[in-house]
Length: 81
Image 1 (cartoon, rainbow, N blue to C red):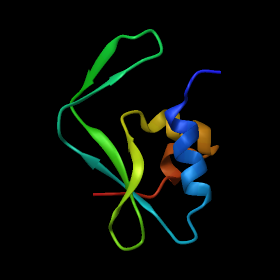
Image 2: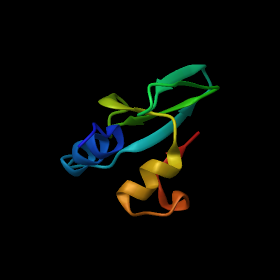
Image 3: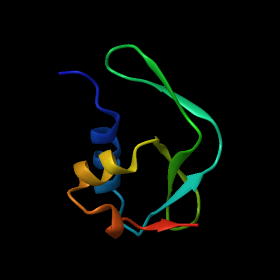
Image 4: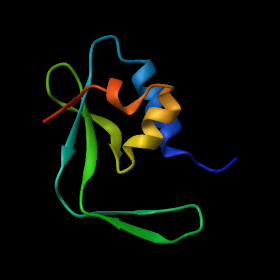
């Protein structure tokens, strides 16, 4: 089975005992897909713990994929500006 970063994020969030939030960061980033292609994005998302510290490995580009793996609508994700 290939590595799935979003599944890893889900496992990490399942271990969180307190609330967490998602922030959109307007900086250029890139990610390699399963085909080895490098995709570029004008932003990325980062997940923070209750103290405002970034949670290790919880940086990603596709909010819809995170919502899907968490089995939540995007509108229910705790995204803050």
